[in-house]
Image: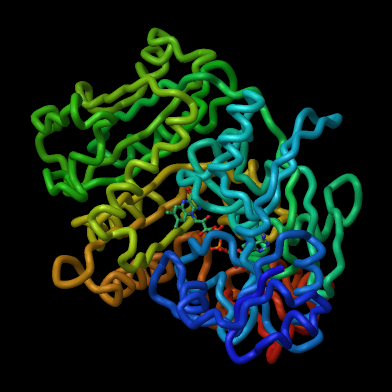
Length: 506
Ligand SMILES: Cc1cc2nc3c(=O)[nH]c(=O)nc-3n(C[C@H](O)[C@H](O)[C@H](O)COP(=O)(O)OP(=O)(O)OC[C@H]3O[C@@H](n4cnc5c(N)ncnc54)[C@H](O)[C@@H]3O)c2cc1C
């Protein structure tokens, strides 16, 4: 175990019972500061120390040390949170990327599983599974530079969610170190089922996930990738909902969608749609007269096992998109799942990857989504957000209510994700302006009485968390905290509990 710290020389590893020959006390503020920032770029929470565990035992001893000394401790995946959720100001950060080791393959009654260290990136899981075994987990995120432990602590959603459920339901067993430093294996069947469900979507509150068993399916070779454009949101939503409700040979394997500006603004407009911008062009003359300020793009994919062109054409026939505004490409499965790499490279190049990202993710019930379009997309966000505005449906029954994630009522709800990639002022709006716009969106949801929940939630005090989880959900959350982390040392950056404000079960 390597520990970087300031003002805590040697004491840390010595007290943790570790050989401190690997411990660096020259490390410096810059290292600590870099662990105090995240992708959001708006919160700085510099830790007292960063611990880089290479084994599960080292995670356990770091947690026991933190508890004994009264430090808060955050597991940090790849730091892709927005509001400092993986930080621990003045506390300890566990750099889980160090726990990325080899991925294993195991069999079982449910079929093959990948046994994955929690600090592995999903990109590493993809590479291992497809190139070595021609298999793949069924459920992904859009971007794969996230850790397995990080997305399992939140949800993990993408275009496969309507079919296979989020990543949190595509895991069969977990190894977890709870707040008392105990290592526990948990699964719905083999024991500790409550801990298993608590940790999934548990925002890092109940334990540090060190390994996950992820079921695998045969991987397709190629994917037919399709985008079609709508000018009418109600038709877009009705087609998308009928597609997510379909299961069987005429179901797509992936469904997402996004709103974009009806104009040639290079960041928010037509250019977002073509799949191969070198060869495909968006012809606005195809749009019906009187189209509004925003248009909608439904994004679909079929795996190659049934990706023949005739079949895809048949499946598109009943849809009410604008004819002539359809875009198709055939790509390898790995290229399809890695499709965001290209946008990442572009954003790194133009500086927007390192600028602040006041992102907002909301789940909005299908019964409110048409009103949401009218009041939020077409009023508050009609000029776009400097990046994708995702809006696509998923099925509530594919989520497991025993888990800690909170989702809206009703059979279908939409993910609305405002993925802002704005240039820093003066070229773009300030982070404060973007945050104010996010607040206006949330205020509108509240005042209109929409049935919604924040995804990747961020609140400042317990009363807001209690509202987020609802009465039963909050009392279950409190009970679980008392059971698994009574000293409230874990994941202080979520601003739910702290060692100074531990939980009291009801
Ligand atoms: C560019 C980008 C694209 C994204 N795309 C998607 C997407 O398509 N779908 C989606 O669902 N989300 C997406 N997200 C959100 C992402 O899932 C969350 O931000 C997630 O928290 C990031 O993972 P991370 O590994 O960096 O975790 P971190 O941000 O480091 O940690 C997140 C939280 O989990 C806790 N945590 C981390 N590791 C562990 C562990 N091993 N055990 C217990 N707790 C732990 C941390 O303490 C913290 O509270 C995206 C984010 C970004 C920045």
